[in-house]
Amino acid sequence: MITVKCAKCKKKIFKYVKIGKGKLWHCWKDRIIEDNSIRDEDEIKCRCGNLVGIDEGKWIKMKQHSFTYSGVIRK
Image (tube, rainbow, N blue to C red; front, side, top):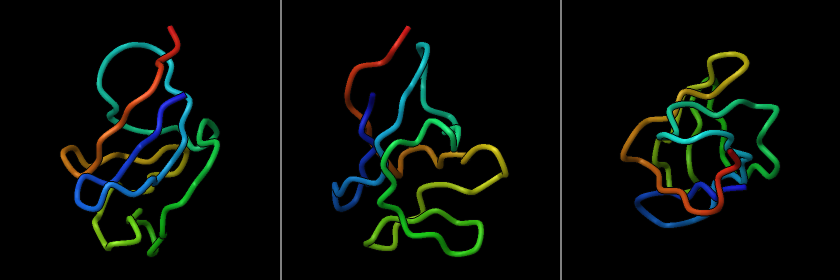
């Protein structure tokens, strides 16, 4: 389980189950446990207005450098 936070204001956006190593390029919607994001049509934003990702159906394509994450990644 990892916690995805906004790079600008450091507020929590998601709690997400990440499986496998590597960068977080996109988040599968069914693996998001807790969602604190604001949705504006297909844009996923933080409460401060920072654009974090784009909703593309089954997943959210994450915008690199607009978020940070920490936690344990399942292998």
